[in-house]
Amino acid sequence: MAKKQTKSKQKMTPAQREARIQAAEERAKREEEAKAHAAKRKQIFTIVVCVILVLALALPTMGLAVLGGGA
Image 1 (tube, rainbow, N blue to C red):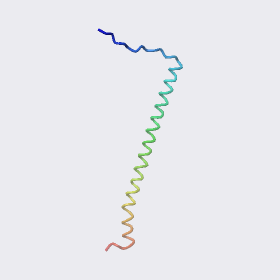
Image 2 (cartoon, rainbow, N blue to C red):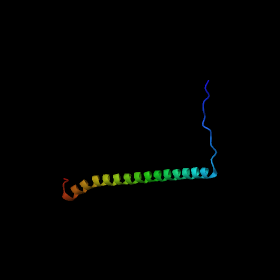
Image 3 (tube, helix red, strand yellow):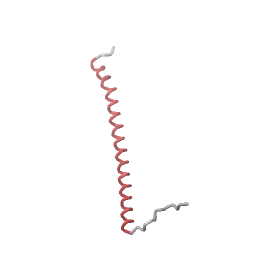
Image 4 (cartoon, rainbow, N blue to C red):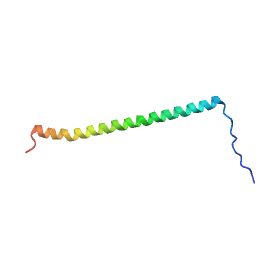
């Protein structure tokens, strides 16, 4: 039977460990900022759609009322 070769774990120096921790913190911060940005964009999109719908319903109604299109 052939032995499986396993990766030997190399010891990390304190500087390497600190660099990995800092990189992980930066990734987490960027991910959090991306989530916040996406939530803000979704909120703005929802407001814009609502305004468009209100205008689409209100303008023809007001136009008919002003021009006397009703009986």
